[in-house]
Length: 148
Image (tube, rainbow, N blue to C red; front, top):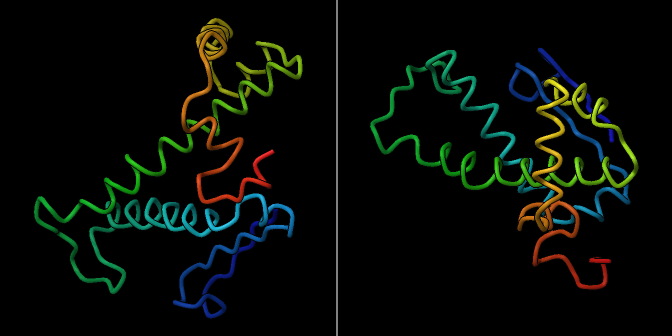
């Protein structure tokens, strides 16, 4: 996987284009979910820019009413965050299964060793969550032949 940036006149809208390139195998593993995940990441970047600049993409003041935040909240809270947590949990479980140390986990998590140990022990004491399973096996739209 590679991340490329185009800025200024090279960018489509003159700001910054973020280009994520996947190998054929990575693309096949993600299937149609790659586009969906990219949309949710786009929402995260867009709403962060809105919160900081208080403007819409055209530079106009952005001050929606109470119902105007629905898409951002839904994409982040109901869609992206649970999947990111599932990915994190799958990686922590994989690190433990590979014999990774608690010290290395603590360093990666940027927490105290005792915190990392507690988090890992809590995770390993239970079955994988719905979104941890999603991270490893994909969603229901993925063909059964690819869910090995």
